[in-house]
Length: 273
Ligand SMILES: [Zn+2]
Image (cartoon, rainbow, N blue to C red; front, top):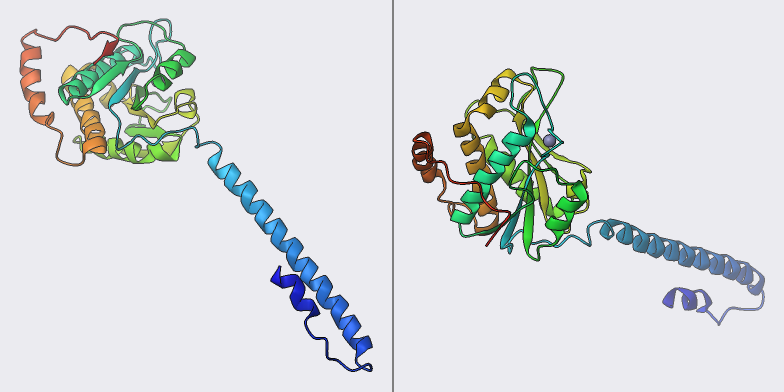
């Protein structure tokens, strides 16, 4: 309001000056109007911008420091084999195995887990999203293995969609690349359905390339899959409780020994508390 009144301030001018003053007044009035219009446009676009910025993420709850449940998603399954290349086993089998190992480690760390599948069955993506968003205070972690026509390509990649998922994606990637001889292919955003439609922090991890001789062969090795699960579990526990809390690493050797004696734990059920 002060902008408008300032243009009509001086009332003590002589008659001879009045013509010039009138012109000046018109100019100042126009100038003031322009400034007001500019301001209105600026405010309007600010409102629009903030609406645009918040719209896609407003539905995502940031539970990264409070979550009690981890939704563990084994990629593919049933009629959907996923990547199926010369060196590696079918992707659907290794994703399930890593997911089950991850599930067990998280429960050992006193976390609730929900698995989108715990056997070799086909689960549509929308059903996975329904399970993912059916949890009140959760994060979502999807396990995949990668594939490329170029056999030389190898390394870990982690994907996310909402900004609140970035920290968890970074932690998982950072833990995975501590595995000896691993390659860091970075953290990326992606429009994958299970990430885009998630209402909680959600990430998808590509645990190496089945199309690569070395990583494909490693994926066949259960000890290596145990290591993958251990690093991912460590990242999830650290995201929730901070660094140094995870105690799973020491259990890897113990579990490895019992498993090599043919005492693999039974496959886990779909929902755990
Ligand atoms: Zn996949």
